[in-house]
Image 1 (cartoon, helix red, strand yellow):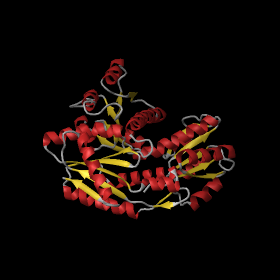
Image 2 (tube, one colour; image 1 turned 60 degrees about the vertical axis):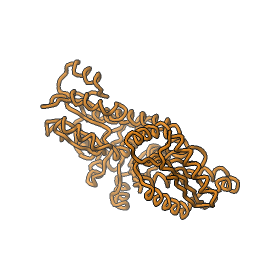
Image 3 (cartoon, one colour; image 1 turned 90 degrees about the horizontal axis):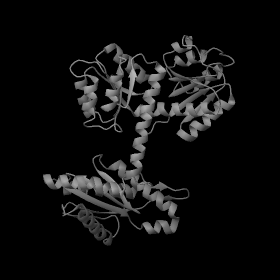
Image 4 (spheres, one colour; image 1 turned 90 degrees about the vertical axis):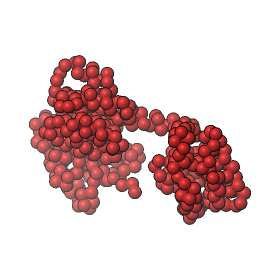
Length: 419
């Protein structure tokens, strides 16, 4: 279940507080609660029992002119961003608050856009794993603390050799911070080893070193590092580099998703199915493994379009996609061939398991109701499948579609498997 995040905004400027509330809620879908003073902030924290994912706090409030609200909110262990009209000196005691992440200078509409970007990054970071690699336990602990502060799930390895195994075992690692000088295997050797299996658009790597030689930087970048940081970095620079690399990685991912995902449903498109499916087909043929091709579609789909409109038809297709993504194992390939016709590839599944799985799926769809803007609707599906390893993948899809036609000829909610 998706967690509903509460964001606290405390600022005596209604323009800023309402601007942040509107933009964060509209763009990010988060719940924003605003307060105009430290007293109001205390009332809000009491009402919500301190349950906020993040707080944006004005440095100069009428009843807290010198950042006292930051210290107050810090007691609730809520990560916070400081909003200030001017840049503050680094020795300002407000920066001693352990849960203060960063500060943002309020300079008009740009400050709102920047703040929203930081909020988005902070929330997204909860799904990102970072691997810190450094043989110095002191420095590794420093980087780990910074990553955790920015809401990143963090793993620490003190050996580069160990880290290569860690990456293979943890598919959610998206960012690696690696030191250059380490025993047994240094950071540069680790980078070369990593790039044999993972591209720069799959895992971002930031190299770190206390050395100032330019050759070190150029070597890392040449052999696959995304970025480089000297170890005397400030917290602000660390935060900016980490966020920047994660955003570039997500941009790569979004571009790739557009190329391989169906625009309406978010499942894979036909092109991706044929490409990935061909690879699975060739492996199955070579190793004499089982491969199943399943096609399914909505019974009487044209009736939904004609009776309730094409918008309802689109909602029906999207609802079926949601159920398929929820019910199918992660190793399956779920794709939309077009209209309401879907295709699923399953590896190493025997006849009995396929029959049971899709009988259960038929029941789940039959019992499901979904909402359109006007109606509550339900429908049934029919399923055709083949586990005969044909001459080509296209032959298998044709065979499965033939089985689907036979299933539909018998009525609704039927399954037919060629074996």
